[in-house]
Length: 133
Image (tube, rainbow, N blue to C red; front, side, top):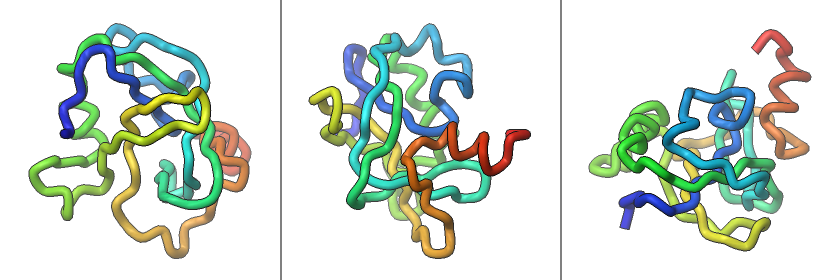
């Protein structure tokens, strides 16, 4: 089931993290830091999470207003009716910490040729690689 409901957890690791917000403060209630399984790659100004051995630094939120999910899906270029054509997929993953399931956008394209973010922290990486971002 791909329906996000109020009360669901949502984990973000890139441009939606604190300090890079899109004004979602009323739609999401912050729950604190989290660790997401996988690795992220720098896709040229934004990150993509893929399965792999590693952990990604993220922030966990509780969904308060689920109507904002359609806007996030559009921003992430996720179309549940055409997943094969979507850049990201919205999936429920088991977090490494805290121990909980959360919605996460995962990259739906190859990452060949894109650098891996070694420490798993996109905001730290972006600041060091291109501090003007």
